[in-house]
Image (cartoon, rainbow, N blue to C red; front, side, top):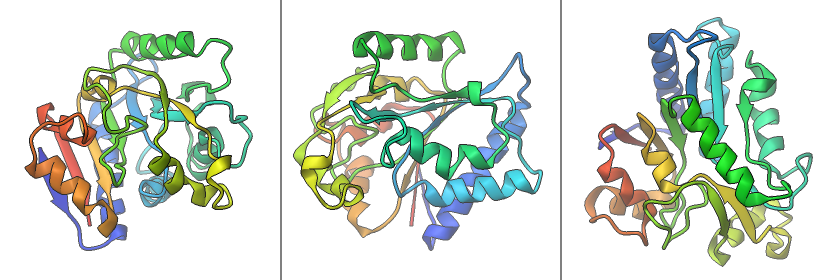
Length: 240
């Protein structure tokens, strides 16, 4: 696993965006051979999204033949809710690039059958030949997507109950009221992420340092889901 250290969050974001652009351009995607990109939400990737928007507007990258799959979505939150991950992605990224709407895939947390929704999501990823590059963030407790500590390292897309710690951290987006944060979410599994051809994790801030230490120096442990990256032949963590 590669560890790439940058001096600031801005440099981290530029490096991550540059790597995504290189991967897509080297792949030379077409309508019949699209590049498949996994994406996260949260504060960590915002700088990367801003850089990608800038590069797209400068004509250095096109997302017309890129298909995206987001990591997760809350259960029961309307898609147009200000804190839904649908809203987050469209406001912070998709509305500002040239990606066709039909190429965007985000889990439906209001689907009538959540299990079927998760199975369809996995099937669509597999039908496309898997994800070429999965960008992700990392929680203070080492969670990836909503794969909380204790998650199975062989898990696929499914519904998960969120830990109180995760809901408490996310309450900053819900008027600092933890009771407003959904208790459940749909999330890609750890195996879903590991099945990607390449995984790039963004981690910024001192509060992520403990999780990074476990990811790099500790053994593989389901109580620190990020340690599963040690088994991936092409994984990297970018931090500041």
